Image 1 (tube, rainbow, N blue to C red):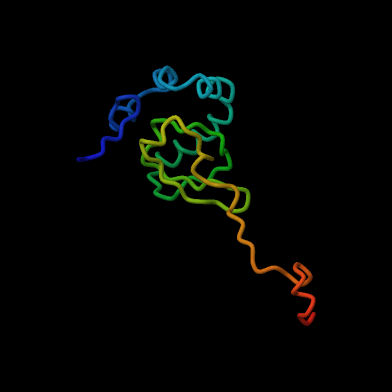
Image 2: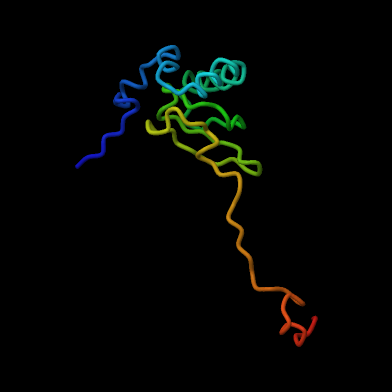
Amino acid sequence: MVERIAFKGMLPAEAAGIDAAQYSKLIKSRQRRWLKRNSLQLRELNEKIEHAKASGSTSPIKTRTREALIMPSWVGLSFDIYNGKEYQHVEIQPAMLGHRLGEFVYSTRRVQHSAPGIKATRGSKFLSQK
């Protein structure tokens, strides 16, 4: 059976055609508040996106705005999102609508510890210090 990816019952093609006013009615209140209050951040990011679309560029859009809400017009675009150390590549899919950019780029890594060091255990006192 084929998986049907939809946003609030709409197919990806339908969801991409939604304007911001209709989209704000479909999302939760926390995201709606962010759209209303952080319009300057979103406007700057949208300018980058419109410039990339107008020039026909296929290169990813670089951004440090991890808290930006993914809009329907961004589906199919690629972003390089800053995780605090480097930019990581993300392709926007229809299932990502309503989420934030930072949710798809982890800012921390799993810690891998090595063997215990010198003087970490009682048995290590017999090891040479060189």
